[in-house]
Each structure stands twice: as C-alpha cells, then as structure tokens.
Amino acid sequence: MSATRRAAVLGSPIAHSLSPVLHRAAYAELGLADWAYDRHEVDEAALPGFLEKLGPEWAGLSLTMPLKRAVIPLLDEISATAASVEAVNTVVLTSDGRRAGDNTDIPGMVAALEERGVRQVERASVLGAGATASSALAALSRICTGEVTAYVRSAARADEMRGWGERLGVTVRTAAWEDAAAAFEAPLTIATTPAGTTDALAAAVPDRPGTLFDVLYEPWPTALATAWAERGGAVVGGLDLLVHQAVLQVERMTGCAPAPLAAMRAAGEAALAAR
Image (tube, rainbow, N blue to C red):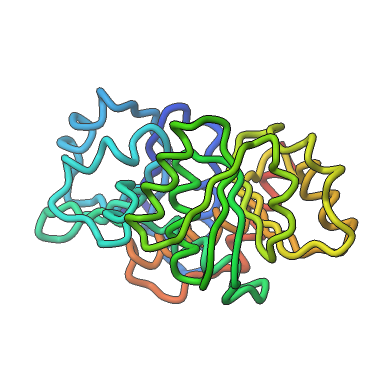
C-alpha cells in the first residue's frame, strides 16, 4: 500500500540518522501500514523551500542540526519548552495547515533518567556548553533542586551557560574544563561533548560514582561510560535519549500513545550493532 501519511527527519549531514529506524519500528508495532518516514538532506538555506512544498499528506518532521533554531521563524507557533532553549526538534503539521514546533529532547532527557530511577537530584554537573548543554540545563530545571556546575573551555562559554541558567531558573556555577574530574563528585553528571572529548577523564571516575548521562550513541560505549559502569555507576546513554525523544515525536505526529518504547529501542540497538 502506498503511504497516505508522511514524516521525515531533516538535517545536514543526515545519512547517519537513526530516526527512520526508530519511527518505522514504531509504525510497524502500531499497525500504521500507510505511514512512511524518510530522511532528507536539508540545510538552512534549503529549509524554507522544503517546507513550502509539503502537501497535506505530511504529518510531521524531526529536525537535527543545523535546523533546530533556523526553523523557528518559519513556524506558526512553538511550545514553551522549545522557546525556553530556542530550539525546535519536532514540527507537527496540523490538518489546518499550521506548523507547530516543539522540543522533545528536554522531556526525553527527563524520561531517560526517570527510567533509570533518577527522578530528583540535589546537585548535578554538566560537561560542555553547546546546544545540548542548554537542553541538559532545561531538563535539570525539572529535577535538580540545587546547584549545577558546568565545566567549560572559555569565559565566553561560561557566560553563555550562566545566561541559560538565569533564563531557565537554574543556579549555574561554572568551572574550567581542566577541573572537569571534579564533576564526578555530583550525584548526576551529564556529558554533552563530542566523541573523544571525555576519554581522558575515564581514569578519574571515582570508586562509587553516581549516575552518568552520556548523550553520545556512536561510538558506544564511550571510554568514560565504560569506566563508569566498571565502577558500578549507573549509565544512561545517547540511544536512551534518542529513543525517548522519538517516542514523544511519534505520539505527537501520529496521535497514537503510548508509542512502543521497547520495539523502538530494540530496532535502534540492532541498527547500531550492524554498523
């Protein structure tokens, strides 16, 4: 049967994206045989034209870099969650032709932590200061009752993180990246840096670590995640985040809830193992 409802992930580069695997697994489990989900290489310059060509068969879009901020002026509305970090990773295309932006990364982080029993912490650490770090602060605004320490490489990044903290209602203290091993004293550490950045910190994991949330999913496990698990600490990985945010996307785009978390995770694990 040809698809009567369509969705896709957009970004540049996009070939590596696991989103099609996750969403298609959800459609199969939900019996949505007339739904299709694809990937499209779209950069900031091409985004307006792509959106204009979408027909009524389109239900939604997942957005990755570099489109999460670029899409905002092209939308009719955005959720408070997306506005809080100026980043949209989900666009729901409504039956009346409106484009509604949302951010499922933030509640996805919260859900991934909750799944591992982390519902509230008294303090936390964040490694890095990029776009994912601001989402981490937004997630921590929901579960952290005390101070968050952000470990950064420059004074400019420190200013940015403190600014995000003020905006999100989180008390943020900044520290130099050279002191990042001290992050592990907190009950929760969220690593938001690119692949390889935290490898040198693996030797500094304490004997009784708390919870590590490492947002990478490839390569996995990271050296830090491996060392953490070897010392008995709880580890939440990038695939956990990817699956939980995709669950929320599926529910918003299809109207079917709950989305099949287990089937989506199994599909993602199989796809990564095959790479």
